[in-house]
Length: 57
Image (cartoon, rainbow, N blue to C red; front, side, top):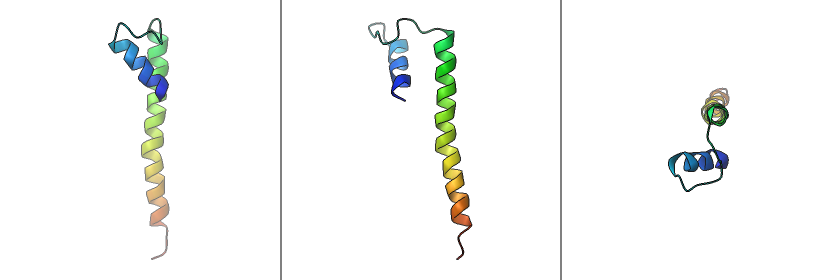
């Protein structure tokens, strides 16, 4: 996630130099990584809720 932050900093600020150029490939990889992070956040929550629902009362 830190790499996404750095990429965003470079996209927003001309002075930032972590990435010399932000092109199509960097954007595609960043989007893919973001999607995977969001899947983990939301799908894991759903799985935990399903597991909790299986507990016997």
